[in-house]
Length: 289
Ligand code: PEP
Ligand code: MN
Image (cartoon, rainbow, N blue to C red; front, side, top):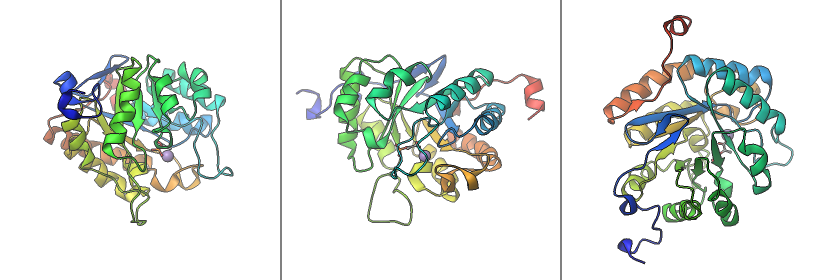
């Protein structure tokens, strides 16, 4: 294979010679934009998702995350509201002008989830599900491809290559921490992967410091560090009642913590040559803020 003997081709920087910018309903991920995706780990109830969506929208956030189907380590843990969760996501996204990012945990759910989401999130556990990646290559929606918890950067880019090879060019990578010998944090956030991916690939890369650290006290600093390292965006877990969250409460920011973090993210973005991509709000909305 040509291309500097890299095992991946379509994912390589050289293939394009510039960094890709991915359009999602008139918003852009990549380039000078810093995209902020926020929301709960899982959709839990109408009241929960509506409270969070309303809050995020008032902050100008354009993308809400939330799992309707959750890949839980324990079969006894909350598995998600499933179809009802998808319906609630759609409802709040329309009400609050938000794009939806939700995980497709299995190929058998792709058709069901497809119409309810704007970005298909593929979790760390599925990054090496190659048959699934091939099917995702045939879809037309942007794919947020999380890094497998044991995946090298090369394996991750080869996973992206599977999707690109199928014809879907809209792949966004997401660093979410890897397993190392250290159990002090949930995962070890590999911040160096961000500039490394920028060097090796044209694909946008965002960071998920929530799964990356497992601890809300570390989410702020690691968000800023990821922006400083050149990330194109952040995915941050936010909850209106983290103590009682049905999944990932300890790593979920309180709403006011997120509101305090956002201006800092804006400053770091500017220092990194980017602008946080926020929804333009009418003055009346701003005043109510
Ligand atoms: C999540 O985003 O809640 C999640 C399950 O992520 P990951 O696949 O990175 O573990
Ligand atoms: Mn989570």
